[in-house]
Length: 259
Ligand SMILES: [Zn+2]
Image 1 (spheres, rainbow, N blue to C red):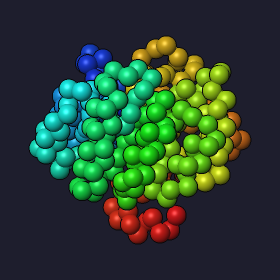
Image 2: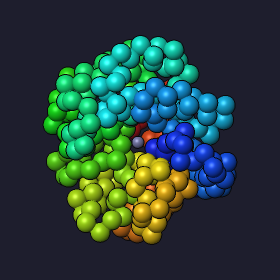
Image 3: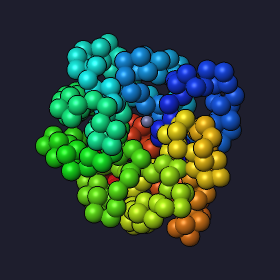
């Protein structure tokens, strides 16, 4: 049974003291990890992981850092080796960069991903409507992961209805107040389309909430989803593996027709 973590910032300094052990634990439980980036430096550091095919890497600018990365030309030197572009999007919850910069940097990276046929990882918080307007204006034909889905039934349906858009749920799925996420997961299960992911080092699932998160802990999210949906973990693994293959398995256009 294959388990994946589609979102772990293993290039972060927080793993400097024990990165090798974290990776060892991950490899004993998982079949692959996506390492997304958030600015220029994290993108450069992420690419170093590509020596090992266990890792897939995205480069790009997170909305928090949009103001200082309006010039995206550094991506020209980095994108070729990367699998995807991300995490990119809008974050009106913390609003660290002005909205205008967030929108411009997001839009330009969307176009960049489409031009270079790279898959996309979306980060979005309290900005769904604006994000949806921008992305549907472009309507990218590459796979798009909606990282750490945080809304309800209406938004999950919108995402699921687009063939190449895939929602991903983080450890907050296990939190007591997250009924909206669990409802959304049920709907995503009806479409057989979702990922489970850690967002390491953040958002540790119960029973590890509050501690530093690491990829191996995605196991707890798989376990929780399996109990909540009343299906075997192998069934969930089948779903996430199929979408992993859709993105990383080679001929994605042929695969898409079979979905
Ligand atoms: Zn992230």
